[in-house]
Length: 188
Image (tube, rainbow, N blue to C red; front, side):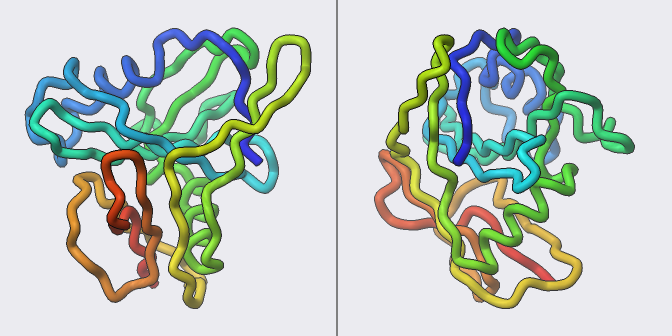
């Protein structure tokens, strides 16, 4: 279960990504200010400390980019190169936002989801009064299953395409993408 607070974020997730993405080697040079949030999915940190959310962003030309993020309450030692932004969360306070590929929690949780054939987390929204409700996810992701390597390495497809793979992987669909596509590959 991914607990989502009704909160204000400064900067917003999309603004933080738009400021960071042009400096990435896989970015195609499109206008980052024209990014559209196509979809998102979450996984659970078993320890409940790190938020794990992946954004699928569409450019005006139709290219879909994948940006996995982790949200932490304190800086991650040795991960300065992966820092996307710091943001203020109106409920949780300061958040350090990292590119998931540089966060060991993202890597471990995603590798486990792939190996175990797991699906994205259930989305539970908590209101200011403490009440909770389940939000239906329009994005569906699942692992194909397979042996979990002792030292997992992920290959995140930053630019989403229809290329198949023989490796265990995470696959997904979302509004506008009815045919499942590979999102992340698990390499041993």
